[in-house]
View 1 (tube, rainbow, N blue to C red):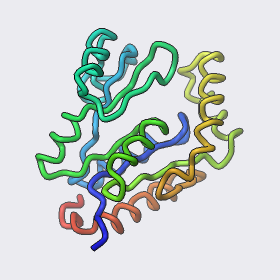
View 2 (cartoon, one colour; view 1 turned 30 degrees about the vertical axis):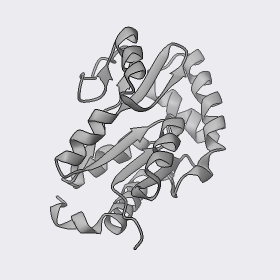
View 3 (tube, rainbow, N blue to C red; view 1 turned 180 degrees about the vertical axis):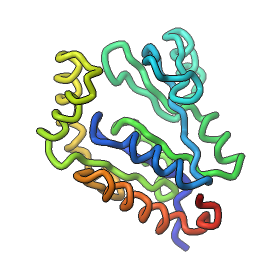
Length: 196
C-alpha cells in the first residue's frame, strides 16, 4: 500500500507567495497546523514569538543544534539561522493534526528527504523572475542590498524545483489558492471531515 502523506511542505523563493498560500490553507482546514520555525533574526514589527517564529539567541540556537534538536537548519543569510525543531513537528502529530511548513527551499528539501513519501512537498513558483523582483520591491520592507540578495538566492532555488512533488505557479493569487485547496483535498482526503 502506498504511503499516505502525513505532513505538507510548502516552499518557494522569497516573494513567490508561499506564506499567503499557507495562511489560506490553515484558515480553511482545521487539521492543518503551522509548524513554527526557529530563527536567530530579529522579529519584525508585526511578528509574535511562538506564533510566527521561535525567536532564539545565537547561543540558544547553536546549543540546540549541538543537542540534535533540529530536523534541519541552515544559515539562510549571513548570521541569520533558521531551523525546524523536532519537538514542534512531534507536538502537532501528537495532537492528531497535519503539520504544514512554510519553509526555505534547502530546508524543505532536507525535510522531504527525511520523510520521503510521508511528506507532500509543494514548490510555489513565481511566473517569472521579473515578477518576483516586482513583488519583493512592492513589499517596501527590504533594502536594495536585501532585494539583490534574495534575487540571487531565488535564482539558485529555482534550479531545485525538481526536488519537489508538485509545482504551483502563482501567477493569479485567487486561482493559486483554489489550486492549493485542491491539492489538500486530494492528498489529505481522510481529514476532509474536519475542513472548515
